[in-house]
Image (cartoon, rainbow, N blue to C red):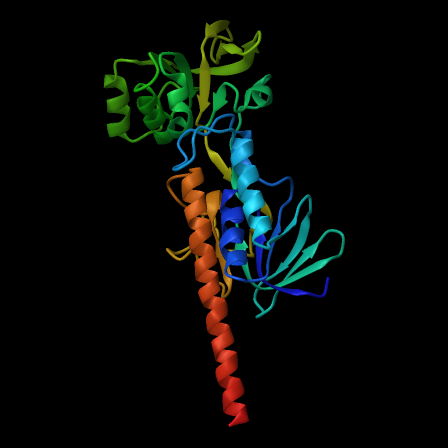
Length: 320
């Protein structure tokens, strides 16, 4: 592949696709490289009801529209690939694929996304997006008038559990320790919230169903005793893993493996930006990923424009 792209985007979730839409619409020659199928975490969400301007829809459908928009604007999509090398410090960046192909571009946007940390127990993968959720803001409304379980004991778990009490009739927190790891003020608020219940020193060992998720099997860690606990849904908040394992030593990462960027999504490496769930930030929503992809694309466009202007100025000086 001898062509040189203006923009190479790593990752085909909402952040990457949004960056592709903006870059290609700006007439920048753009390619999106994705390790699997396009759409990211959103394709695992059964229903999306809080995306502005879009009526309730399947996560897969929303991702499909984003992909079509990027493609229609001229973005080249390459999926199911593996990247083995990054060369980012030269003016023309180079990305080497496992099949030997080299992708060259004037700028790169990393939108590799992330994934919720899982429990790793029976039935978990089967019910992801169909009874098991990782976002109270996204899915809380679907459990109005129902009883749910929240797994975790940190700030996110307790804050999301409190948020869920606006919808659910009962929220039960299952936590593996006898104490929470959240800030004292958050713990106090949780304990004062009437709809919240607590099952401590316990863990979920299995998700149970007939036609849908209807119960979990809970084990008391100290005694080993188990019991069946009926529930309409489970929210898991035990951490988040950015997909940056192969970027150590290549991009600036914090101690959680998240890419460090400024407000322009700039990584500190000229011509290299990042967006979406792989960056260091507080909120992880489809809308925030889309916004960050947009900012990264516009910022990179300005960078490319400035490089072209420098080249033109130098050319004029030589001619003169």
